Length: 267
Image (tube, rainbow, N blue to C red; front, side, top):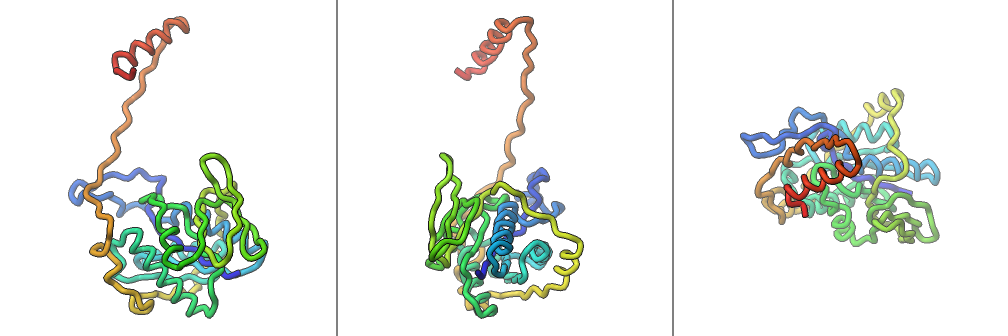
């Protein structure tokens, strides 16, 4: 199978982000960029599928030149080819603009590789915006079937048997290929690259793709084309310290707790 994994480079979500008062935007310039966590799960799932059933993995990202580092990391843990969509016209795109850009990139990469993709993987969401929209929008633009929030998949007659996570449990879904799937957190974590694979990944040539290369309409990309506008960004309210109740008996403790809640008008 020919597999494409769409990844995004995001600020490390283990680092607390503060608001830049001068710009009114998140102050992320000094935070190390990493592969979005759910995209990492998607790549690991794709790699395990390739190891079990054969195939080739290509990764693609839309972003600045520094996103090349994340693409190389992906090549160190399963991907054999990588492409970077790098064009000023994409800057400030919303989810629809990003999905449109990826849809044009898919066609261009298929042309470059001389093959059609059977499975296109996306993370279910990104840790910087958590909209969960790009994967479904990409499927719509490519006119492909999709399954969201998957945690496993196996080959099946005519396509794939997919395990989808829901709030109530799991759904088992058969989907024809080619298709788009978005990946939630499976029962395993992404692997770490070996030193040998990291050295090999440094030699991988990562071509740039521009809007002109893809034949994309730049009027559908970027901040001016965005359907969603960010009016203002706020820092989350700081959590206040809790109250410790140290009474002599259980009855006194419960009475004190109820009194505090009554004073706070919780009920």
